[in-house]
Image 1: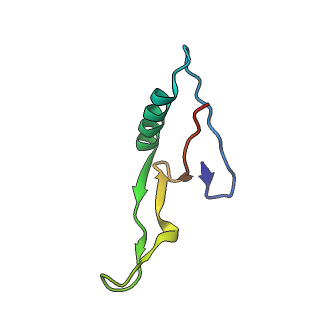
Image 2 (image 1 turned 135 degrees about the horizontal axis):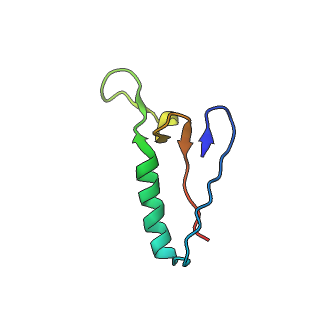
Length: 73
């Protein structure tokens, strides 16, 4: 997670017993959906004019920052 104060926060989730990669991807998607909300880019001017893609992404539901993905190891 990239927090709005500039810090990067890494959360590690351990599963016992360990899970395989396919289950990890499924759980990662579910975690992202539960912890954040996708936001489209902001419109630039009138409809059809363009979109500011710099504000597009997964924003944490607690308002602290953005979620940029997950790693399955």
